[in-house]
Length: 476
Image 1 (cartoon, rainbow, N blue to C red):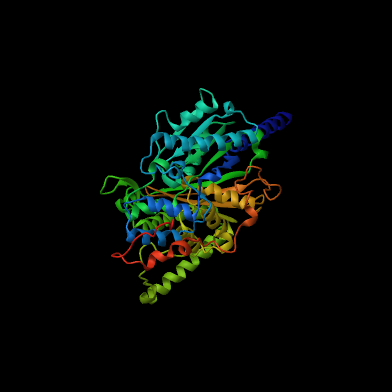
Image 2: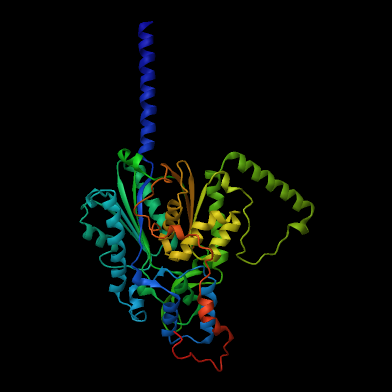
């Protein structure tokens, strides 16, 4: 009997040990954000209405029709007067960019952001185990990752990933890389540097589909510290719950809707096709199909399925009511309540139409899309780093409470739609991060109006005729 009890006790101890080991191993595979630092360029790089007009006037390839197109695009863009442009634009050299312009732009970003981040966390660069750098439109030799390693004198065995050509959704791709490494290696610290080099890619031609990029994209960047170290879990801000990546590169129309190319005069620019909204909608819907069951409660999924079944029955009984001929790319409501599983929505600031479209599709309120709308107004579309400016807005507004879930949605050339959910693991409503990029101006947001003054200053262009048009002396 005693032998049986001993055997039973040993068996329970073994099972307890295995279960505990299994739980511990899963904890080691978690991906946490320890801290992040968005880049705020110096004020001498701020693009006012006056200066924006000067940039456009310098482009001798533009005519009245291009002026009217740009005025309409800027007025409806949702961008304000405090965004930042590359330094060479302020020096009047946008038509003659050099490789060094791009490198200097990136150095200004990572020296500022990575330096502040590591100093605030009192982490030595030599403690970083993994470095992931994503800058889509600049490829250098040595790589930007190597330049960061050289500047901060990181260890010789640091694991390095240098991503280019990934577009606006690249930062979530970088997170996915880190997440997968964390599954195999415990007790690691990762650093992500996400930005975009605009200087060498400023378009000086007159192709409307390429000019549009100059109106939307602005300078910025973000450095993010991630870890799966047990000793740092209590200091972490967010834990990654799930991620879904959707890639429609096999579709020709999706592949070609957002692409770097040359115009008829061999000027390189970033082409945004008219079918971009349709490609984005299709990728967004496919992404939602995969991530929705991962983030919403079963009750909401059952409610949605029942509602969908009833709708199909009604359509079968009366087919004419079910047929709706909507224009391509028109946002369609998902018909499911995402707020049953998500408290905050971190939307990529690809433009006013992108924010409004996602807001409509997910049936979000103005409160939900305010962070993205305000980020677009204050910082513009900073490409892959834009999501982190949106997240920083939520933090600065003290909206993020422990246990809240944040849904990140981003789009990128290829065409891609990437999304993920972060869980807030400690209360961020008290104190706030000292390095938050919004701290200097958060009390002014949201402003009473986010309309920009471009129409007020340049609206007279709309009344001009092609045969008699002439730029008045001194209007800039």
